[in-house]
Length: 291
Image (cartoon, rainbow, N blue to C red; front, side, top):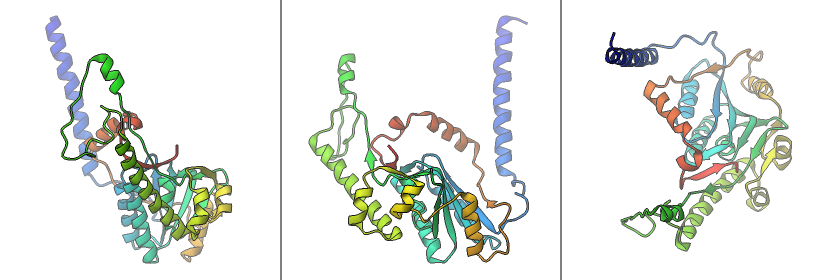
C-alpha cells in the first residue's frame, strides 16, 4: 500500500471510530436507563462543584418530589458556590417545597459555601460536619483588562455601544470610575439580597449578621455557634433525622436518586467549558463563591 493510501486509510478508520462512538453514546442516552434497584422512601440530590446552572438540580428535585414513594429528600452539598441566579433558582424551588411541607434536609460535605450555602437556606434542617467549610456570605465580580499588553503588541480595539455602561468590564480598556461604581452598585444590591435571605431563614437580625457576612468561611462547628447551621453531623445523621421526620420505621439503607441522562453534545460542551479557566469563563459575572 502506498503512503497516500495509508494516510487515507488512517483518516477513514479514525473518523469511522468517532462516528461509531457518537452513535453509541446517542443511543445509550435515548434508551431507558436501568432501574436503580430497590426503591427507597428517601431521595438524594447532589449540588456538586461550581454552581452555574440550577436546572439539573431542580429537575432532580422535582422528579423525586413527584415520586409517590419518596417521602423526603436529602440535598448533599459539595460546592464552593457559583453564579447568583443558579443559587437563587435552587433556593426558590426549595422554598416552594418547604411551603408545601415536603421534608428536605441539607447535608454539607467538605465545602458548602457562598452560593452553595445560599441555595439550601430553606431546608428544614441543615447538617454540617464539624470540619465542613461553609458561610462565605458575600458577592464578588472580577474581570481582566489587558490594554497595556495590547499596546505592546500594537493592537487596538474599538467598541461601538448603545450606552455608556454597555462595555463596562471590557478586557480592552481600563475600567473608569463610573464602571467601578456601576459594578459596586450591582454587587451591593446582590449582597443585600443574600443578607436578607440568610436573615429570614436563619432568624438572625441583619445588624447581627453583617459582622459575620464579610466573605469569611466558617467551620461547621463555628457555623453552628453562629446559627448558620442547625446540627453537627454526617450525611448519615441527616438521613437518620429525616427518617424520623418522615415517620419511617427504620433508616433506609440506600437513597433514591434521579440523575437525568445528558446528551452527547451536552457532555462534550460541558467538558470544553470545564477546561476553560474560571477567570476567563466567568468574566464580569456576579458570583457567590469562596475566595
